[in-house]
Length: 256
Image 1: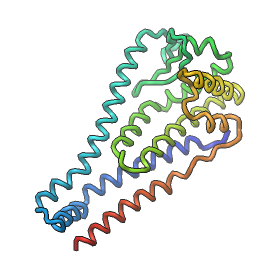
Image 2 (image 1 turned 135 degrees about the vertical axis):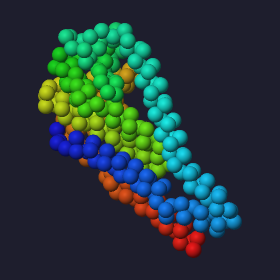
Image 3 (image 1 turned 30 degrees about the vertical axis):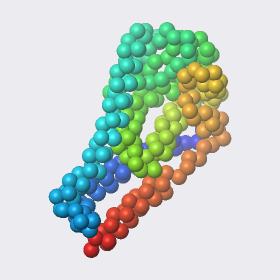
């Protein structure tokens, strides 16, 4: 498998931090408030309206982030109640077995993540493929990936109006899966990992929840050593940033 998927994860996180830094700087710089006020004067509005309008973007950001965060927390609470009946897998407390016939395997929890695997998954997969699935989920636990996803999805909710936000989130989710697959390959081997992904893909076609998620082709290609080349991340981020900056400068120049 290609190395560097953890680097891909970090690249997406760096892009997200750049968006946060740019938005924070943009809505706090005096230039921003001056531009909004001058735009109001240009259109015949009073300066008080400009001050009120200057609070609109940060308010929209906070509302979008709060909506996304709230939905995730509610879903996590419901999931926690459903998993309360799970029994420990083996001697550890990090993995629970769910008495469900559908094949399931996932990691949840923010500060102390745990893995859930269904009885259906245990009965479906041969031991080596099951070991690959458990190694994959163990990586998610060690990295606290559910918490990372919580933060990234909240950020995507805040910047819902940017074209970059959805591809950034989708690419990040895939990068997390590829990095976990990379760890599983080291622990369990190439064939068991590819077999587990293929088994899950067949289950997905049958309508069951699956370990492969919605990223079958890139994950299988990486698992088989065929390589995966993600689309360019930074060009899209800089493109959106440039458009926003150009719009702001154009508005400022028209107000003079």
